[in-house]
Image (cartoon, rainbow, N blue to C red; front, top):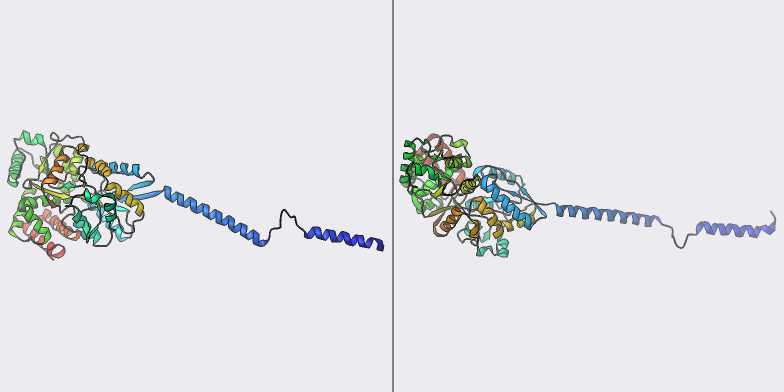
Length: 452
């Protein structure tokens, strides 16, 4: 090679080397670290978007599961009316109706017990004010106090003083009552009584005489009754009629004697009442038994005032299709129960449960629910214009009568005591042995009741 080209070649090679090693000033070369950061940023953005979408889905799919035994008649219709109020106030919360059929909650409460044992509590459930609530769920430490709801909503000013102690323990309130029911109601067919020249009975003796007359006229079973819980319902009203309010209440506070001659006489009255009952009672629901009265196949039925909601729902009018009075011998006494809803500890959707309880205790919720259900509101500031003739009479009686609690519907006995009474009653319905029945009641009080 000629030496004169050597410097030129070196300069050319140097320029090529600079071009190969250099980069654009506007587009700096990405390093491995920069690529990793970019990938991390992309992954983080994707995760944030996914989390936002999940939170949005959860917000849109809020649910409250409410457990009750309101599945038929006026009670189911009343629940639907209150659900409509809930949907208007909380449109973003889906209401899951977990109702289980079974009169007086017999089946539902068995299902609930299984769920609670398995740690699968609903967001809220129906319970009866009184010992069913305090002696069962509060005693098992399963409920959260709801004093804050009463304070925030001013409910202590509108809820009856009679009721608050029954849903409280050690200064804590444990449920929101939605209604007041009367247990000691005698439903009757006005046409049947009129055609047979029978006045509405006011005492046990008058009732027995009326049913004797109806049987003599060809009505085999003037008193309609259903399955066993309805027999317990009848039993508690006869106890009240026979013992009077003082003697009745003494059985539940420990001052009375289940083995006394007065209780023996009350059991004899109950045994006599059962001689007028339909033979297929164990196969009938309370609705079936109520239907016998409005159809004219029976003259009387003893049932709580939810029966009135049922009568209206199936098209019967008060004072023509059906009439009512206090169970004979219980006039001037209001044997009551109250349905209420609770806030369980660890509720799966606590905020949604609180929303439900807020509606249950509101005047809008109670005035939507009770006229249809066949009960009077727990609140004292209800709109009376929404309530029918029977319910207005019940409001007046609630305000003026002596108030005593129901056995069947959770006021006076805890679950264990009530269960033992129910077992004794079942045996008595089968064998009619009054002495055995009374001995079993004495044992039940000593085992699980106030006689311990």
